[in-house]
Image (cartoon, rainbow over all chains, first blue to last red; front, side, top):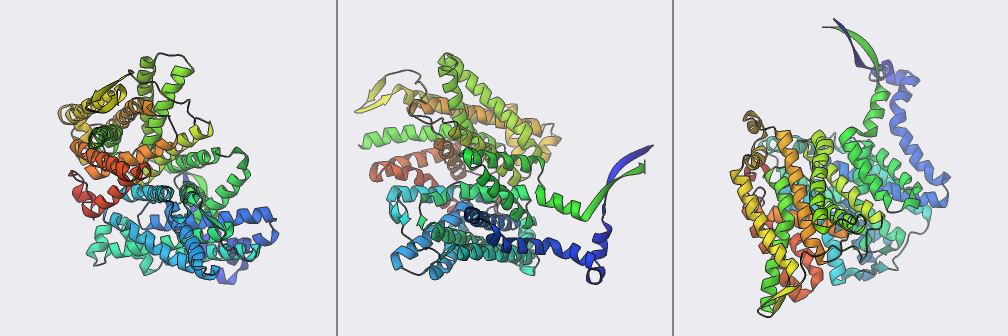
Length: 335
Length: 290
């Protein structure tokens, strides 16, 4: 009996551009180089063409994109965080504290907050590293709330009022380009990192931790390093936003900073980093356009999160990638 | 002062146990994540409120309907969301958390906040023990809470369904080979857990107004109790509830109500550091530690 089935085949241009043709034919060369180069040019050009309001949106989008990238990185190592707000908030408060207490300049507070924030986040999460399963998610969900409550209860670090009167960047161009360049660095850095030996070990921890242990590698130390990397990047975002807003308060531990990066990564597609970037650049501007509906935004993120994780778990990026590299056709099969 | 702390600590502990029972049944005993638990708790509260104040149903009927509806919602959550991502822990957590978030934020958006959102107490009045006044609602909580805990203990040990609940968490493949339909049992477990959330909500919410934020607190408290008690242990739930319950009351008495929430959060971190599988957790001890 003859039956039909869809088959997926690599496009000719993809096969050719895997080979020496990529260097000899400009069509193949463009096929290979446009996907990585286009976002760089676009991101560097955007601040120039956008009006002031959308420049601000670009800054927020880039921050959420960086948070989504760091979330994706943690998932690569096998840790699912439900609280990127922890990393973000720790960095934000550290920058505010350094600024107010010691009067340090911006270019000192941000790097300091980045490093110290990463360290604090890693140490806080050390107890959970010895467990697999959902414990990591639970604790990361709990910690930002705990910080929020502690600050509310004790009135430390400005309590409910927050810290105000912080230094700001000299102008919006510095803000825009600083965050865009960091975004590109983080994005390509992570893409590079996971292909190195170091990244291979991290990925292996996700796939089979016992095998990595039996390979004589201390997985707790590796996981702690991964946490430090993620924590630092999240803390940088926080510190940066503190100086953009010239204010830091309890909202930095809000659920928004946890759920939006997560939703971005899931909608865009986990595991490739490009997906997280794409997801953030879809969701955040979208939410800005939907500003009128206010509180319903979180509902929309949550629903898109559920729909994507249940129905389209590969995410947008992998779909686009497949279309770019392969075509489908009906084939007849005998059986 | 001491007497008040002891009595109210006891009541607080029972409340915690009541909150944690449903979560423990789903997550601890059957190993199915339900991070929409807090949302279900709040949803049941609002459902009762809507049925009483907008549809004019009597309280008893509204309460029973709310429990049934929440259980059905749990079943639907399992059938349409969890079933499709079953076994992928990451997706289970994210999907159920997303559902919970959507529900809670939707209630916030619809404006379900304010002092008028209260549930009626079962019976009015209070009794005096020593010099301490206790209202009837708290007695109801203690009575029903203790009987539910005992009921759950017996249920997971002496009924076929209850044993199946534990079976699928211990070893799903073996459970399948013994004729347990693990998908159906897991679905039932989510439904039972949701029903327990609704019962807890109907009992506990009359003490104050229904607020969306409480949904997150409920989830955190339930998680804290389950982690500290150890997954899969009903005794653990009770012991952990009493530990956190009294710890909360003592911090409340000595350093103000704001610190109450922090107690359970700190307790989670300490227990994970000292004894990661919880006080009474056995079935997952080897599997979850690395």
